[in-house]
Length: 370
Image 1: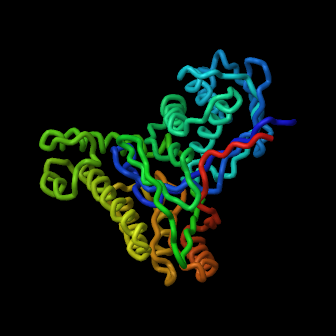
Image 2: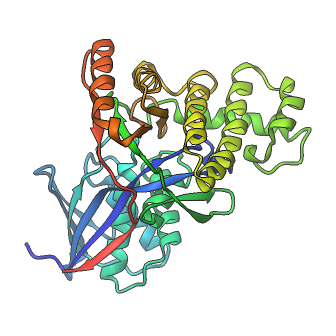
């Protein structure tokens, strides 16, 4: 079948700043060259006909009755995107859409955001509308929250839409603004490893963690004038943490200090201090393991095997956790050895293999007329 446009959006890796986006914090993601690509053409009907390169499944969505597709195994994200696009007052055209996803599912590299953002950008392109990356990111988040029922922050969709080649994005999740920071690792490379453990965000502890951080904020607001948990400084936290019960205190401690690590990581990146950045990644992983409790054995084995490798400056889990990926900063001349050693240790301890990805830091939305 011939299509008129090719529209892609990026998966993302979060360098540091995990589980702080929904607490109003700053995060430090980058878009990856692993993308979801949508081939699309308007078809003059009131149907969105969906097909995939990865499955024979096909589905036809009625653009006048989009609420009914939330439980589809394939097509629910696209239906949610079409619905929020329409409800935001945009022109929704019937179209034929082929989806080609190169972001590994369940990897924590945000295949869902890449799918949502590329689908919305494709709908914009065929309607003849100018692409507003910020609006597309916000609509994609809305589709994920209201349609797919994952109570996510803005980071994934924003990074997917706004990525810039060879730059990380310092994203302020409180006021949804960003600055680009050149991502230069000198004689090191960023290595992504997938633990290959099946996980699902909806059924995981993700929404539970959100409610724990909300409880922490309510309690701290009785003694501090803050809008969000990310506004609490480490000094303020140490002064008032005694009012927080057990696990709620742990969750808040992670958020407060992770926000501090983001600031320090951006400074390290700007000054070319890659060794310091690596150390901060290790601290982030320890906090996610001990205070936020979202790692699990597989991610811990991966991160610790990496941290113990001679040519690795730092490693941590990235994404929501409970499975997914780690990122490691590794000397370029040691990358092959790193993969072999870490891969062998992981298989020996876990009983199955991890996967390694070669990915560049890339642009977000890319559109092409065919």
